[in-house]
Image 1: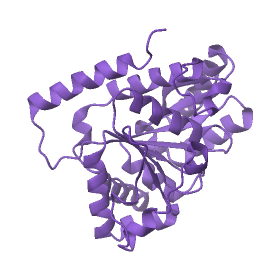
Image 2 (image 1 turned 90 degrees about the vertical axis):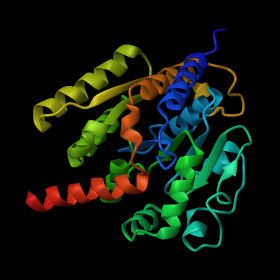
Image 3 (image 1 turned 180 degrees about the vertical axis):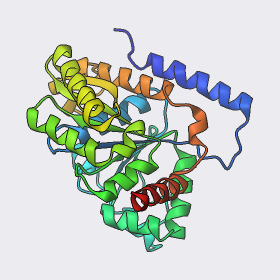
Length: 291
């Protein structure tokens, strides 16, 4: 069987060579930050976040997958126990390194303690959080934020700080309707958001969902959301213990990951998550006041 991660490994080797030749400042954050959200529960967002992290790690990436809300149960799904989370960084009782759980192979997990606590610390410009974010962005190639599946201003604020986001949807009618509602509420973020249709029985069904969402946003919002692609229904997607077997779902995720990496201009990553949060959200607040 052809190694589905081969393309990713080749791509990252090329990127590292390019980075060496262009000598980016050591103060520039290196991590690419990908947010994953959904407008409805049960669409497989957390499974997709974890499988994407495993795929990127297998391709040679140093990856941190961050359960922002602290309710996605990454520890239960992946079979580990770690007592520390973001709150321990904010109080100074643990360092940015100590709150990470490492599998020892380039994949790390970070547990949150609530979206409100995180966004409040960001707005207050917590020096402890700022230092921690700088450490994590310098430490990892990719940081995946597993965001809550809810339409809220706090989630939108965090999406704005990500370099790009995936809006996970399924072909189920209520999930499609909820996804459009989400896009309508944060139309200013659509230029950095892409649809991923998950649990699609066929490619025709997935493309039909994508086409309907794109046509609807174009008609009513005068914009068009991009599509990252789709992931077919695959029972093996929830079986994390045996990630070496590459079924249809994992092959699709390898393809999505490759497209995501190649589709991001490295010049977009010169600003940190902390800086992007304040710049993006100040701009959003100014636009809202003007309206």
